[in-house]
Length: 249
Image (cartoon, rainbow, N blue to C red; front, top):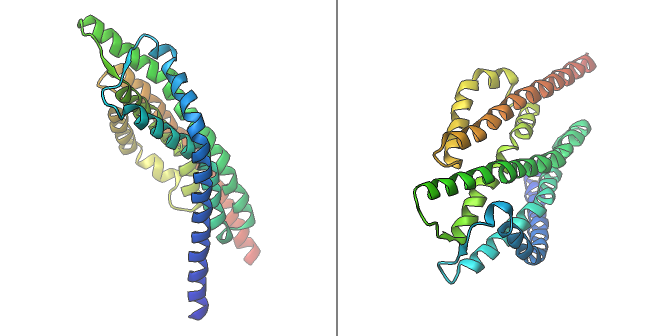
């Protein structure tokens, strides 16, 4: 009983130590992100799709709000690999040596997929949506007066979710290795998953069919890739279990 209680206390102490590392690292990165926020905002304002738009601040606090939002997001993105590493370091003592190496490799894959998702949304989807909205306003003879806060809020709402949605293959691989999901289960619920992804695509994009398809089709492709990834991970799990059973014999 005492040994079990000490084990629980040890886990709590380890978790507390990891959280302190994360908070301290994030604080240091956040200080540096204040110097990066301004050039990032200026770059986005001078991008091709934003050149023809006149940005306006409708409230005195809009500039500082945008500046703080970008500083926070930049700090979060930069510190995310360190956060994931601390999470891995916390759970790794309960894993086998081979599992430690495999799960550690998830960190760079996750970061790359996040950047790919954000890049896809910003360089492909976002310009299309902005051009569509601008053409629609011109055809209706509407003079667009765009608030800079609303512009960047719309930009972030359209791009950041894709970074997280592109994590789907990594999440599925991890859950498969843990035995929580199987490729058979993912194939069985495919139509329900498609419906959920269709709803997510509708929530992210404006009510326009082309942009909706530009979102949902890649999401469907991600789900199919996730099934393939799950099959590969599932075969490895079965192989490991078979080797362990033969070893016991």
